[in-house]
Length: 395
Ligand SMILES: *Cc1c(COP(=O)(O)O)cnc(C)c1O
Image 1 (tube, protein in one colour):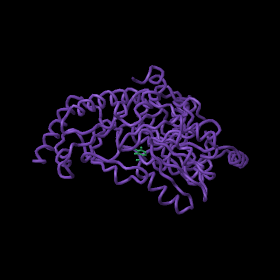
Image 2 (cartoon, rainbow, N blue to C red):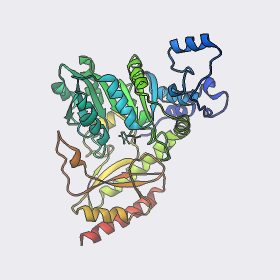
Image 3 (cartoon, protein in one colour):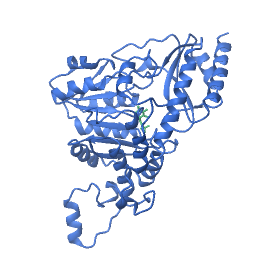
Image 4 (cartoon, protein in one colour):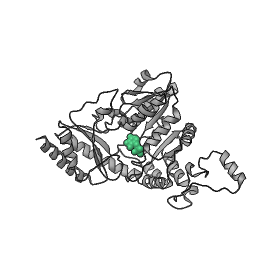
């Protein structure tokens, strides 16, 4: 399984409209706050028109941002338009604000990214919006949780930390029959591995900070809206004053050009390492969508074009101290948040702390790995040392 030729070609050509690039290979960084008008009549006419793709005021973007936004739209067949945000969390928050009002009900998978849960339990709750968390494997059973006032079903597939793959088409079918909007956090797969809009999702979100940027040096988010769904998102985004800087968008576009080949390498190396970890007696379980034992694996096989480079594993016994001994002994894995860059990372994770609708039980502590672009053999040797340190710490 790998991204096909068309995808590789598309990430190279997408968004490079001559209007945005002026004939240069990469669109220049157009920095702006003020846009100068020819005369008062020009100023009046500009304000009265839709400012999407038109110079109006710096907050509404310049060709640098539009080029990346258009590129992300082109990667999603059936999409209308894309907006950029200063982070992935800003993209999530703006989309939910665009779709929800006081008195509404929201459904969120129990495996969701923790800041998404914080927003639902914090600001959304304060605004009078109620959230129900659901088992990520619920599929068409989500119908039983839909109420008269349910406006949004949020999805994240695979789930953060634990990697359950959702039956997105089944949930989308339930939502469509009831006029409920669907919002997917597609950061793990990107449109190259999971064509969300084509599969019926209304809004697909990327923490572009991860694979789009690809170099661990920029915060960026995006939301791509299906045909007919863009206006609501745009209006709320403008009211919230959300904007991404042209410099960051430029770096995002630069990263995007190599995303297909990076994803292929991340995916291949991560699966090789996941399969190696599975053979180790110190490891109780590997949580990787491409492995048959991963909950929802059948939906991964049916709907995804491949896997990316992030997965977790559960240790066979031990505790905090033993897990720390493993992670601290690694040479090629940095210890830190985020992922999707060229370098490998290891993170201690405790998914049970974030569950409210389902129970997450484990044989021991868990570790999340972001597999970078190093030689996988070096990473395996590193993990072998880590597992030896874990065993030694267990005594
Ligand atoms: C990192 C991440 C986000 C948030 O992105 P930021 O750019 O860090 O705000 C959202 N969803 C998922 C699944 C993530 O891993």
